[in-house]
Image (cartoon, rainbow, N blue to C red; front, side, top):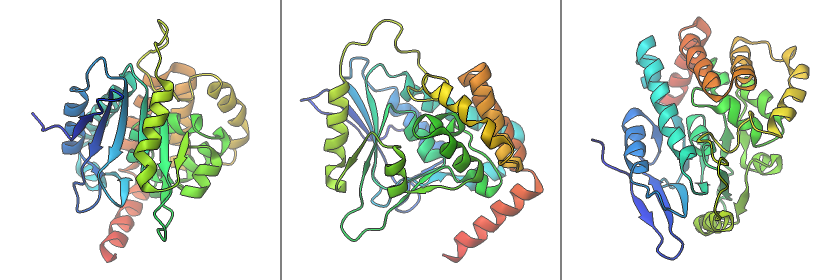
Length: 297
């Protein structure tokens, strides 16, 4: 049994905070051991919790992304199982009956942003004085692969669908300022020190008794819900001729699956397409170049 991550309950508000711990130097990287610890922690969240905040213990990032080396090394069945496991664990956040918020203090990329978007709200903090703006987005298509934990269907419900789809299909993250302007965040704290108080205030403001049937265990913000569905359907025709690369087409297939057949179908397409793309020559070459560039830093 994996050890839980730090889990605290504020006695004044009843809000539970789960803090992700750095696992690769000062960075938080989503690998299987961390996902197992997230699962162990979520199983300890009380059923009567008044709210939930997902925070990061890294001073530099929220979550820098998934462990790409592990993804490349897995067999096709192993990767499918791993992605499905992550999808189930992240889905545990969406299944919580209380308001949930991700407190984003730094880079939120790839799987890190996907994890955060399973929360009801994204609350960001501006960098400390003199700090550089951090990136937010889904860069997978830039490595000739695609998201695998729901990102294709989550980001279009957080910002203008046309821009979200275009960025996902090309692997172009946003700067923090661009993400703020795009409306990705539900609130923005002026400093890192203000982040948790801002997240707490958002969760407290949402606390109420939910109506029967209001909660269906799916993410609160995804493109299958209105008005996001209608907006996404309106945006797609103008993008299909523009976004023609293999990774872009893979992302569009996942989006279509979500719109036509639902959340589970979208996740299945993401798993299949990511598994395929990382074994294509373009995917292998792009990932190898990424590792080479990272080694030089």
